[in-house]
Length: 75
Image (cartoon, rainbow, N blue to C red; front, side, top):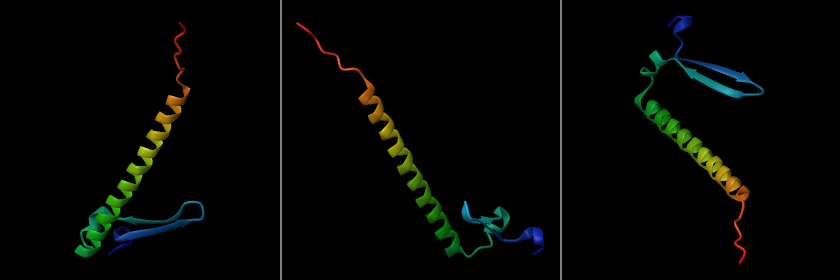
């Protein structure tokens, strides 16, 4: 493989951490077990993000409910 055809690239920054970038064309060359683990990891990451979004929605709804005025009927 030439320099432009690397299977993956590893980048690190102190502020953002470690990042692995896989070339889409090279992904199919990975062993099938590795691809299965990566698909499962991607699914777990999406589920974690869903949980985060759900929590943010719930917090927003609770804050909105607290701001609504209460109607008191006087007789």
